[in-house]
Amino acid sequence: MKILVSGVCGFVGSTLARALLQSGRGHHVIGFDNFIRPGSETNRAELKALGVKLFHGDLRAASDLETLPACDWVIDAAANPSVLAGVDGKTSSRQLIEHNLGGTVNMLEYCKQHRAGFILLSTSRVYAIAPLAALAVETVDGAFRPARGAALPPGLTAAGLDETFATLAPVSLYGATKLASEALALEYGETFQLPVFINRCGVLAGAGQFGRPDQGIFAYWLNSHLRRRPLKYIGFGGLGHQVRDCLHPRDLVPVLEQQFGAPRLAAADRVANFSGGAASAMSLRQLTAWCDARFGPHAVGADSAPRPFDIPWIILDPAKAARVWRWQPQTKTTAILDEIAAHAQAHPGWLDLSAPL
Image 1 (tube, rainbow, N blue to C red):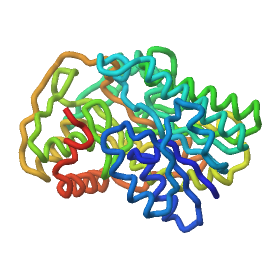
Image 2 (tube, rainbow, N blue to C red; image 1 turned 135 degrees about the horizontal axis):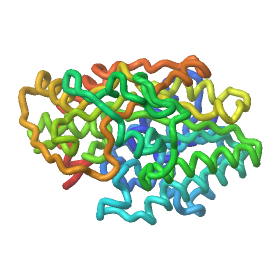
Image 3 (tube, rainbow, N blue to C red; image 1 turned 120 degrees about the vertical axis):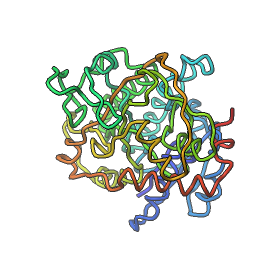
Image 4 (cartoon, helix red, strand yellow; image 1 turned 90 degrees about the vertical axis):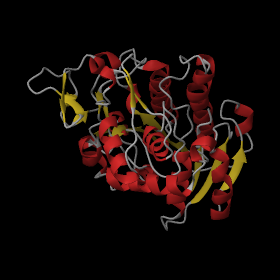
């Protein structure tokens, strides 16, 4: 199987490329990257040594894709993944849309030309912010959870959000680009008879992730704690009770392998959540406690001012993935944190490389 991975030198793209090559199924992996993300160059040499054929290109430029060889499948792992992109005063909203949505269009045109299947790695951020921001929560063991006895919006249970949860605006500009990409991908699949799958991922984390306060939070928090860099709980009273789930991207490989060989499914079954679920979830305060035990105590500051698009609790329910694909996450959160910690200890300059001030 010839597989093209966009954003191949990013954390997710490089992790998937390595895992696919190590699966023993004889895959031939091709990748391209524009190397604009700090730290992405660190993966180039290793991927080349593993046999990945690398191309330097920007998926926003259709002409950059013209020299790519034909492949059987595309895994679209390239994106600006920050929910603050386009609104933080540091990044352009137009560039965000060109990259996340325009880039998807160019990849879909590549798939149309070469009759390739398309797998979009999407996000939990396609789900509506308003009902999540208004969610009645209670605090247990330093973490928010939906308040017992409170009315919950449709598509949400204690197990998390399922695929029927609202996707109405606002979802952030980032979320909107991914939601629009999902719709276009499904339309291309129907119109041009291409196999298309939408994998909505929870928070992805693991060793070698490029951590920043607005993305890659697990890697950022552990590296900052270890190096005694300033850390701060933002919003929600400055207490760090906000909760997210956690998933290692290599745990996606078993479902990717199934999707490569799957017949065309009904549209409803081509969109599914993939996350560590409620068992993987933790709050920032709980993450700090883990870091204190591993690295020694480090004080965390507080800023109770709200930040755009922040929500107190979001966990994706992966029950549909289990039903349709017999998929379960394999790597526990503690193992992911151990992996990040070991990488942080072995790479003292990682924050300076991947999250320069």
